[in-house]
Image: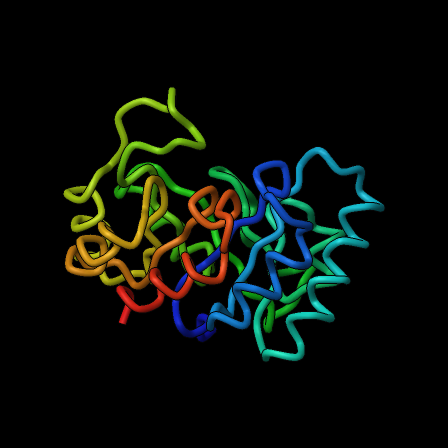
Length: 203
């Protein structure tokens, strides 16, 4: 499975957004983002499916990819799913099919090989830096853990946690395939401008 390009994943959180979620999505798509994952856990399942479908329709105009965090039903309306650590990758593949993009959250580089064996297309490794979204998360793998995970060559590693335009190059230099962001874009006055900065530094 080929990951979207550029490999910059925006994870949504409309509670942080200053403008409606579809407007955020359109701004970042206009800026060059081609990958969004819907992570709206407070919505009921029906609402989450509706939001997902709206973003998929918008993304289609930009040939962008929409995945969903943790909701298999909503993911069926999108291009794939991102599972929490311990999520059942083979079951997701069985339900969503061979063309679905399936990712897995990891916090330990040692778990990357197992994720590859299970059939994940990519993993996020976090937190790389201190994260405003999860301030009490505790010690993370950091750049050294990112280097360890990337050196295995098993799967594309997406660096997550405290990533901004200024430190994104450090992630890529440490072997990350790409980066994932949430609050830095969602809470921005101008999400498109922030996304352009991230993509520019991503190269």
